[in-house]
Length: 297
Image (tube, rainbow, N blue to C red; front, side, top):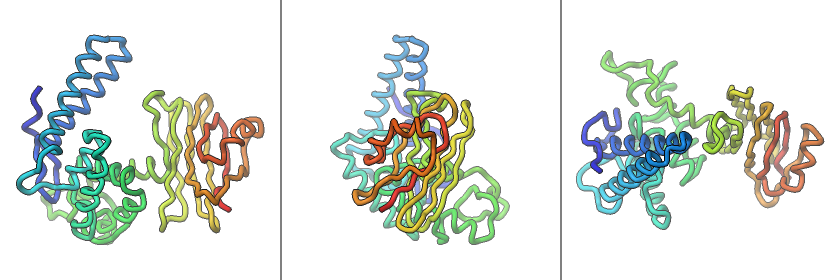
C-alpha cells in the first residue's frame, strides 16, 4: 500500500518537512480510526482490512523515516515527535528517538519549537510523555522567539498563523498553533479521555505540576456533567480538588514522591473509605462526587 505524496505537509514549520511524512501519518491515523469504528459496528471484515492497512502504512513510515538516515534538510523536531506520537518506533529503540528529539530541541533557536501546524501538537505530546512536562512548560512559557510567549510579549491578544507576526500576508488571528490549549487540559489539568469508554464515562485525571506554576484550574463539560481538576501549591506540597460527574469514574494519578503521603481533606466518607488503602500509590479510582486531597509531607 502506497503512502501519500501530495498535500500541505507541516504548514509553517521553520524547516522543511516531507509531504510523505505528514500525509502518510494522517492516512495511518484515519486507518486506525476506521479499524475502531469497524469493531464497534462488529464488521470483522472491515476491521481486519483497516488493521492491515494501518500496519502497512506504519511499516512504510518506519522504513522511510526511521530505519535509514534522512538525506537533506528536515525538521527533526517534527520528524521524531511524529514518529513517537504515532507509535511508529519499535519499543526497544524508543530511547534513541527520545535522545534525537532532545537534541533537536537543543539545537533550535532559544531551544524552542520550530514545528508547524501538525508537528506542534505531536511535539507537545511527545516531549511531555517521553522527556518531561517541565521541558514543555519551559518552551510554552518562554518569551523568546519562536513561541507563544514571544507572541504575547509583542502585544498579541490572538494567536498568529506564523511564529513571526505577519504583515498582511498571513492571519494574526488564527487557531494555528492553538493545540497548546489541549496541552493545558491534558497535562496541566490532567483531564484525559479513556478511549475504551467513549463519552467520558471513565476518564483520567493525571495532572502535572511543573516548576514555575503555582496553580491550575481546568474544567470540561462532559455528557454526564462538569469534570473539574484543580491544584495549587501549598508549602512543600499540593492541594488537589477533583469533581467527578454523576455516573462517571475518574482514574486518578497524582504525582507523589516516596517521602510524601496523600491526605484526604474532603469528600463523601463512604466513597473515600473504598480508596484509603490505595492512596499510598497515588493511583486510585473516584466515583461521582467532589474530593480534596493534599500531597506532601
